[in-house]
Length: 102
Image 1 (cartoon, rainbow, N blue to C red):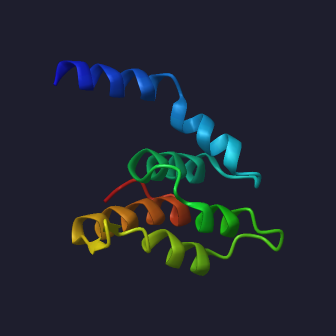
Image 2: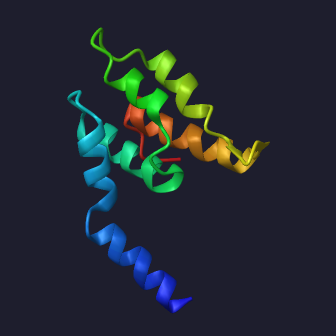
């Protein structure tokens, strides 16, 4: 367990997830939006191509579309998980409103 914790801590402190978001998102983001995407990337991995497309949209970000896509990442191996739905809702709330408090 200790080794796993060291690997996770090292990965986070080396900025891996921040760098992933920086490399995939071309649109200007607020610090809060960036933080929310880093959390999403840490929790969901880099599987968010539909979300990335909606955020990088040339016509601007449509929060309704982004929210719908964001919250659709609520399954593991095809099985819906309420806890994952709750996490996605919290992440999107941060992204869209800047509300760090839950």
